[in-house]
Length: 461
Image (cartoon, rainbow, N blue to C red):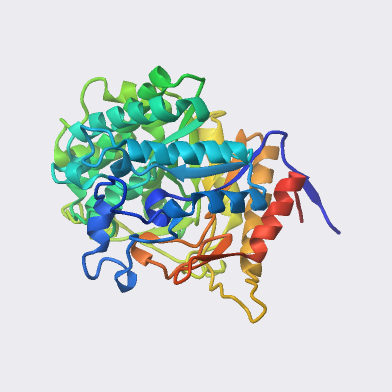
């Protein structure tokens, strides 16, 4: 028996990308270098030494790519702006060619009745700012405020929704703590400073958008959140799960939505780096916007207690430092990247957000999975696994709405197969298959399926 799940009127149906992952043209029209240009060219940092020099060549294919989005039936498109295209050094002179590129993109989207959802920062910090310390330095937050003001002045008449930062947990703890992402630094204390300054930059940028936008604007932040469960009911495992929840989720949600940091984790960080990194008034700035929250959900976390190691300073020892170890759930299937597939985790996460923080407007700003997609002899890509993945997660989203969650939209990651950071081109997340040798785009079966869901504003189960 078929069940039809109808979504609310006005629900935003979209898909997402980011600048460095698709644009290419890294040395054209005045663009400066970013930390990912530098990091991806260091041997050993990425799969097969892959980089974003060309990626999907979207910079040169803007018109045809937006035409393709129109064929997908997207009502909204989440993209990011490359800060080095706007300010090559991260401060100082403005590169008008960069602003003109994004002006064309916004106008072309509007011409296709696709709403732009603009992310100001998706990890591509100008290398010039990193040379001065990057997000470890408080000044970078103020340079981000300046950049946000410039972009809003240039594009604000065509943009209703903004996201300040994408996944600051990754920027801080993978980039400055684990060394797994750009800029490739490896100290937990450094990551803590970066995390606070990123959050401060969110508050400062939100203020700049409000003050500068010529039209009312919704402003949010996109966080990679996960439900965290203990491996057992033992007190130690329960405490371990709470520590991971605080570090992964609450450290970013609490200051944005409550104007405070989780007390116990803050005490740990103060013991690590001292108590001077949070200045008077910082938390008021961070929490003043009361924004929507973008939820980037991929998989749940399950943890057990392990030996405590508060003396560890390298974030490659995250588990040691937090006193936890990750435990796989054998009951869950895995995606092509080895990530657990759990739509129920999305429902759990959304409901907990409502229970913990009240009726905050939410968007699922990323959700998707990599599979082993290939072009068959008929020239088609039959990614049935992705269709089932999306169907399950959309059903979970609908159930959350039925339970009173203020969920306003859903964005698939990603429009195209693209450069997946340290994984290079080895993982395909797209609704559209990209042949990176020829730049041919092929709509996968999931693209046609998603188009039909959007057209119906409903999901059939």
